[in-house]
Image 1: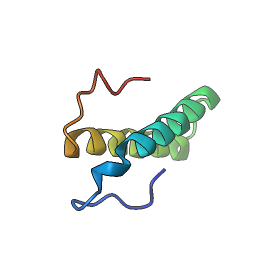
Image 2: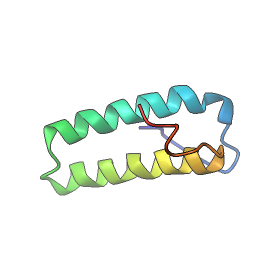
Image 3: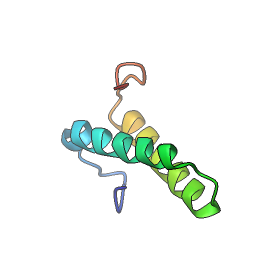
Image 4: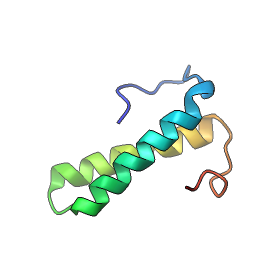
Length: 65
């Protein structure tokens, strides 16, 4: 998970960041999200992915693994 995403996010990092975030999300989902803390982390990662996709104007369907 990225520490801090702000409006000045550098889209040049989007490819690597999205790849890393999607890997983390996949691992967390594989472990199950039964605990509130785990679900909160999953939600935060999903929000970070959405932020990058929107900020960098990346088509959601082309950003799939």
